[in-house]
Image (cartoon, rainbow, N blue to C red; front, side):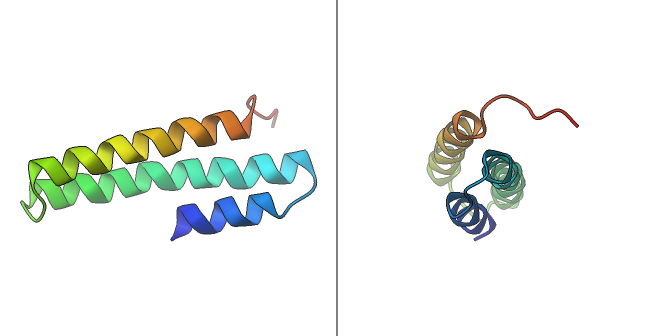
Length: 75
């Protein structure tokens, strides 16, 4: 839910820096989701196929969000 919420909020912003910040947060949420997926797999609560499918999807989402975020912001 966090990934979707941050994408939606970023899409609703007009300032480029605001959009970028929310897309970066969404990308961070993909790594968090990947960790949860790892735990499910380690505990054998999902199959190898489900794990791989989830990892592939999260990798694609992370790549899209990286492109949407643009260049790293200066802090």
